[in-house]
Image (cartoon, rainbow, N blue to C red; front, side, top):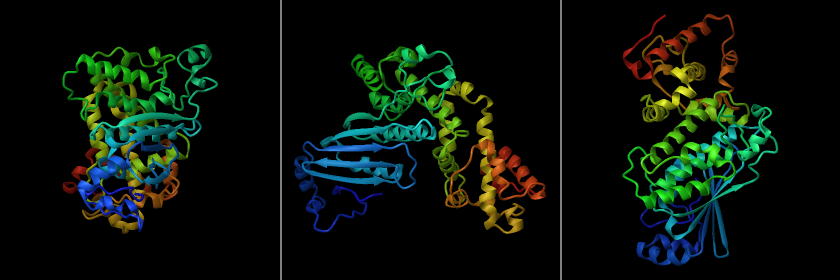
Length: 405
């Protein structure tokens, strides 16, 4: 995390302020902080910059401008962003969120932007409602329809003519709609959309205005037909369903997307699948389970019978073996003993060492594995057998189960 701009006196984290910084007085007293900060933040603007390019060290950039001064720092990951947004006095300043256009030739950039806007909306909801303005930078329109549209050029422009980096099949879902959708939750302003109290007519009117302000108007009646038809009784459910559908679709498509960004997104997903250590707890699986229980009907169109998810898991275990086997002894590496490192310990730091350029498309993973295990060797067949066994029993049961060849 970059150097924080200010320290609220109520925070317990360590603060690194430059020497002789005139703002350091704000860290000495809560009363002084409350009195001085109101004047200090008067007419100030906090710029939140979301870039689509993958950078393992920079997840989000913050620019703070007040009076004649400008300070900029980077947030390295979502955890850093949560700490910043929980402690920054948003009610005393204006927030402008800048979303830079993704490159359609590197479709993983759209997935990365979706992850960032989705996370940003989630971390903003628990805080006091700030004054937020959304800005999309660059041209989000396309001079020509995607190849999947065939000869329907006129219809493409009638529906908005917006860039679509990842075709959603029969449904037209342009990049701009994808990255703006999470901010529709700010119209609800509830932490749990599945448990929303009755919405008043006034609250529903605010939500409708939020909907129309977020999305391009040309062709909106075709692109967002279901959201436009929601009522105050169905609004929360429809918004949550749209978010889950988009998330699962992009998560599934990421398996086979071309481009450097998708390679690193697959690496991030796999290396963080389980928590480091021996717990075998998975936030990734917990999120999927929650989504599927909330909107079970969504999966029928995106991943029938969960075939893609099952294959993703099997390949995870294969790659986990490839990552860990150089650090295990021959027999322990094969999992013949209870204390095999492969079956007892998850180490996310090993993945970037083994895959410094990211993970290839999952359909090419077997070719990738042949870098480590030559074809025709019995060892490769044994790892395939292990993957099938793990796919059936799952890592949570490994403590009580022992597989021998």
